[in-house]
Amino acid sequence: MRIVLVGPPGAGKGTQAARLSERLDVPHISTGDIFRENMKNETELGKEAQRYVDAGDLVPDEVTVRMVKDRLAQPDAAQGFLLDGFPRNTAQAEELASVLADLDQQLDAVLVFEVDDEELVKRLMARGRSDDTEETIRHRQEVYRSETEPLIAHYQDVAVRVDAIGSVDEITDRAMDALADEPDD
Image (cartoon, rainbow, N blue to C red):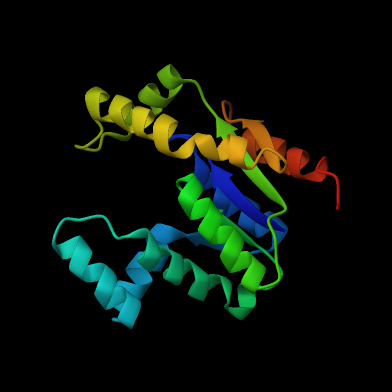
């Protein structure tokens, strides 16, 4: 299965990606991990990304897309993957569609992890990170709503909503059930 995970910060995407990856026997591909790996190994793309990071700028979509394309072309992703952290907006979704078309692949599902705002604030405040102030968390929620939430409409044909409130096991089971209920093309 080829799956994209979408949800606001604090929805548990990373936790669920690791669990679903194991259950589905496909790699969990996190853009953060791809960045770190490329920069650590000083690949050409990693060096390019490092210049932006060192300057305090966001890595441009074109560099991110090239890194994702390289990662999706690796043998372990040939039979499926879970993408976490990409795409973050509809422009990146269009780029992903192009990358997958080049690989003669398409997405099977977009899992949308849903959690209400107050629960998200509670979860993120409990992490105790210095950048997790209520003001910062609420700003991230607004950025998610304006930038990333439109992906749900973009992917309406393959979007599957998952209630992401409950125990980690319950949420994993809901996600697996939602994927099992998806009709095959």
